[in-house]
Length: 404
Image (cartoon, rainbow, N blue to C red; front, side, top):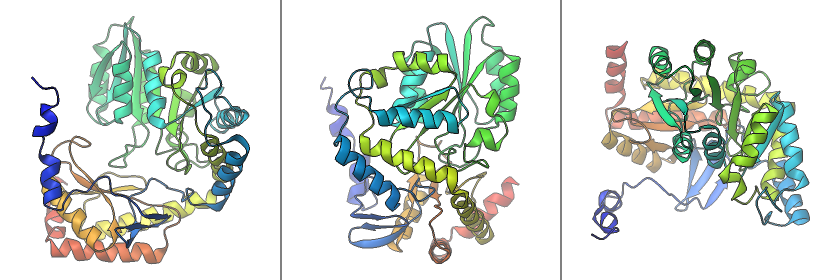
């Protein structure tokens, strides 16, 4: 049997490409913050995770350029050996202070952060108890370890308690959730999770990739926003979103983070963050700490956009964040709606199974602090135009009424 036969027989993507409905791996010719260029056509970008609009900020660009000139384009090694620059140490110390943690360490990507941190902590007699909607890196981190995994229904605290109750009392237990769920924009029920964590003598890791920089009075994320910072044992996150850079971090008690630092294969056997990425992240952290008006602008854009979408009749689910899904319900409608939006100059992300469960397909939009009112007004007009053209608005409105 040819191991590659599955590749040659797989025709799903081929069919999408033949029908000109393949929506992924689009090459951006220019990246202009709230606008982008695709196939020589300028589009309004509402599909980016650059929540604070920092990836095109001149201060980050200048910091990255200076660091590249001083340290070169690569660290040329892993953190364990020759790849630790004074910049990495500075960033880790600054992050620990910012997040009110004893220690923080940085990885090359957010995905590698969860791979390394989780696989280090989950031993043979341990259990990871995860929300079914957590990021793929969390699942892969557990698989890379030697422990067992239990999944509970999304934000279902009764199901979480049932799973916790089924685990032997002498087993190690780590509850893992996203702070902000990346597809539908809702928040983990951290207050109730903390209560159950204490009741069953478990520990709690929150992946706050989409929360840090966005939520909380000081931008420390979902844990700050929900008032449970002191009850969460470990926080992981990424620099590729609100920080406008690339990399990831884990923060917590010194002994815990020190253990991860010396056990995480994705740190020990991978080259460290580039000097440019570290420098850009440091500058982004300065901005997050000193310019709260960026978060205020982001939330103003978010609240207005979500309100208008709902008034038009679109189902935006349970989002509480700048991630605003437009629920479609099936793959065909999702691709069709995405295609019409693209033709009108709006860049969004079509999300289908397995990224979401079947029947929960959606168009994922995400707002930025730097979107102008004119841009959002234009996008809303296009959503209304496309929704009416495809006769989707009324159908979605009726579905919402039926569920309520």
